[in-house]
Image 1 (tube, rainbow, N blue to C red):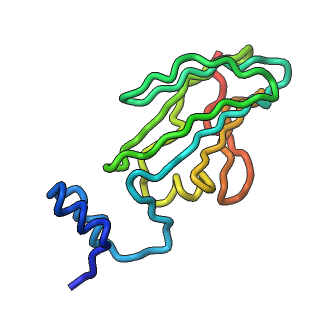
Image 2: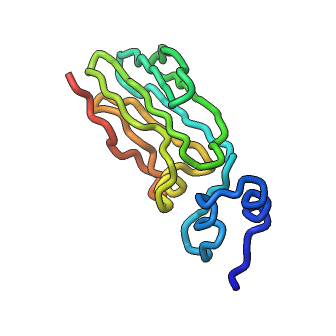
Length: 149
C-alpha cells in the first residue's frame, strides 16, 4: 500500500474530499509540489520608458482596485493559496502603449507555476513591448502579453 502524507491524512479525515485523494497518493516526482495555503507574492514592475502603468487586479473573490505605478516603481500583492489550489489572479494593464488583460497567478498545472515563479514570487515587468514574466527557470524576461491598441 502507498504511504500517505500526514497533512493529506488529516485533510482527508476532516474534509472527506475525493479531490484530495489523487495528490495525496501521488508518487514523488521531479516537479516542485506546492502545498495548500502556500504564501505567494506577485510583483509588477514598471520598466517602461516615460509611461505610467495603470493596474487593476482581481480574483474570483477579491477586487484589489486600480493602482498607478510610476516609471521605475512597483506594486505587489501577497496572499495564501486556497486549499484546493485554484487561486487565480488576473490584472488589466494600461499605458500609453495600449492595454491588455492577463493572468498573473494561476492554478498549478504540472510544475509551470513553481518553475517560473522563484521563491513563491511571480515577477512581472511592464515594458514598451508589453507585459513580461520573469522566467525563474532561465532567469530571463519573456513576453507574455503584448500591448493591444
